[in-house]
Image 1 (tube, helix red, strand yellow):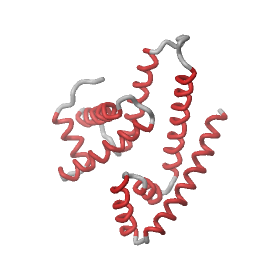
Image 2 (cartoon, rainbow, N blue to C red; image 1 turned 180 degrees about the horizontal axis):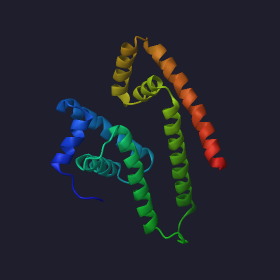
Image 3 (tube, rainbow, N blue to C red; image 1 turned 90 degrees about the vertical axis):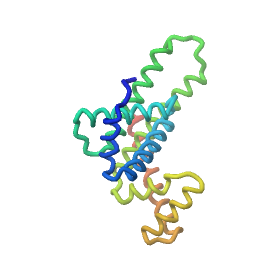
Length: 191
C-alpha cells in the first residue's frame, strides 16, 4: 500500500466534503461507513484497512491538485481499484494448480464472483433510478436495528408520508431493483 497520509491532504479531503469542519467530519464518517460496507459485501479480507487506503488515495489526489467533481463517486471508483488489487494479491499467493484446493474453496470463489456480479448489477440498476428514488431506497436501508427505525421515521416525516406509505414506496422500489438486477445478471452470465 502507499505512503502515509499528510495532515494537509486529510484537511483538503475534509474541506472538499463540506466547508463546515463538523459537517465535514460527519460526511467523512458516513462515507467511511459506506466504503466499509462496499468492501464487506464484496468479501474483502480487511474492509476497514481497504477503506482507509481508499480515502487516503483520494486525499492524496486532492492534495496533488486533481479536480474531483464528486468525492463520493470518485471514492467508489478508487475502492473498486483497491479491491481488484487485493484480489490480485491473493491470487498471486494461491497456486492455481494446487491439488489440495477443496471443492468448497472453489465454490466459495464462485459465490464471491456471483456476489460481485450481483453487486455490480445493483450499482448499475441504482444508477438508472431517478435521483429522488435512489436517495429514498439508499436512505431507507442505510442503518441497522434501532438506528434504522429512527431514520425511517425521520425520512417519512421529511417526505410528508405515513410510515406505512414510506414502506410501500420502498418495497415498490426494491421490487423494481430486484427485477432489474435479475435481468442484468442474466445478460452478464449469458456473455
